[in-house]
Image 1 (cartoon, rainbow, N blue to C red):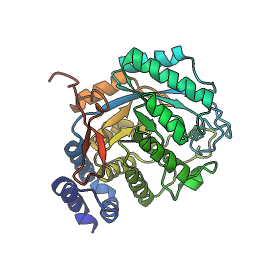
Image 2: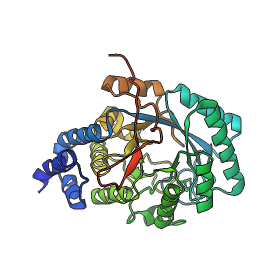
Image 3: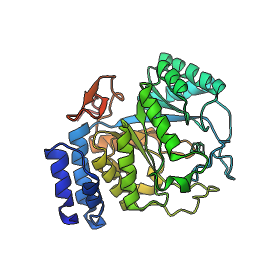
Image 4: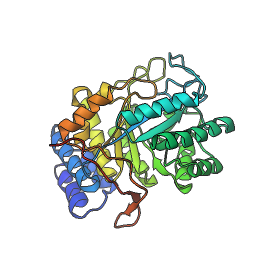
Length: 355
Ligand code: SF4
């Protein structure tokens, strides 16, 4: 019964310390939006209890932009759509390094090298591997990569090169995916996510909300992600890009977005839940609420094809919220749940500001 759903979820997650069943999560999703403050408050308590108060910061570099052969309907980097996105080949090493230094200066601890491709061809992979080594050596940042679909051998080479975390989003739930992309399958994506874990990298795997999926499908999506055991789940909120098939998609309301973030926290209680692209456009003045609704990580600076706000504004926001900045995505030590099913890096933190 929806009225009891929040109490059931609270007992499961905070007293019994177990994950929600699909039915329990569906009941929470059915709680009317006028009870959103109660859902948000529960998600925040779950985040504090399972993850602590820290917020992890990451920056991205779009190291190779546009001209992607795939047809993901939300993406302005597809060569199949008429968009105004910048098109350039893999950046020079100096440019990647400059962005990494800027990441460090912005107080982020993780730097993700992203390229717009179906999957990396040999020359590109070698350039990325070179860049990973140089960035690590010169900045000490943790390096993540997002290079599309991988072969087992490519995943192993990236892991051996020191790539800590591999990002590969499922983008949306299995049911909706064929409407969003026809040039590769949902199972292709699942396979690469699994390959990354098998090769020894941490998995960063999330997607985009607001692409026409129903609330139930959002819940399905969160459970499909949970099945993969990602240590990080980026949540993008669709900011429709001109020229793409989703250009006219109605954006989520701030309340729908906050409800979804809170549901993701309840379904993925121990993941780094990262607010990514679209938070400025969709949440607007309620951005702080995203961090009180269960999110505990941010992309700082710009996104792949859109401009974010300044890192200083995000630091000021975290300070106002009293949320310390995590000093990294963990140190390679792992904690394991009581059921032994999920492992994630232990977190160490530094305070962001003196009281
Ligand atoms: S989301 Fe990735 S694979 Fe899909 S079109 Fe954009 S760059 Fe290509």
